[in-house]
Amino acid sequence: MAGSMVTLTSFDGREFSAYLAKADASGASGIVILQEIFGINTFVREAADRFAAAGYNVIAPDLFWRQEPGLQLNPGSEEDRARAMGLMKNLDEDAAMRDAASSAAWLRDAMACERVGAVGYCLGGKLAYLAAMDPAFDATVAYYGVAIQSALAKADGIRAPLLLHIAAEDTLCPPEAQAQIVEALEPKGVRITTHAGAGHAFARYNTPAYNAAAAEPADSETSEFLTEYLK
Image 1 (cartoon, rainbow, N blue to C red):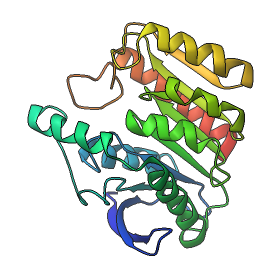
Image 2: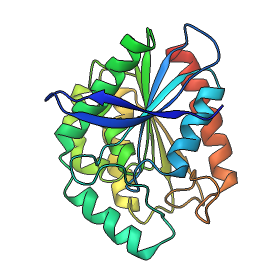
Image 3: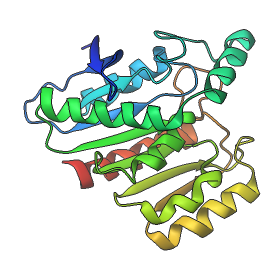
């Protein structure tokens, strides 16, 4: 069943929108989907719907609302890609993380979710890494997070189980960055899976970037990980 847009309240008392997809059963755990750079577009909504079909209450907050609310950009458009890169560059990361935490709190309150995780892609992958340090989340999963290597100094703050999916051929996370991430995070108990032959956005369904050979086992591992820590 398709979800719907809802309105949440930010930490500073302002309102922003989010896409909500509900589980069929009561008492479900929650997941916050942390977006790519393209807003709450078709891919993000479909990802939320898939997790809802797997038995979670899912919310995907609009993390660009302070700049341009309601954006749904097309990753196949060069114009939209340039626009999205500018939005990412100017994102207030701390505010976005507080919006993510507010979304988790909303799931606990409005949907009675006892446990809440986060799953992030691209930009959201880095935010999912940071979410593992936030008590709002019980477990987090990051797909091809961008610039995680620039935030490794924060790794001592990891408190929740964290799964990272790294694309071996990701031009936005080159081999030296991948090595830094593995060296810094594996000793801290972070689960890291590197997907050979996969490029950035390999799990973005219904687009040329999609790589089933990498996405299907990645999604299966994510499902098992979330079942272990959220259900």
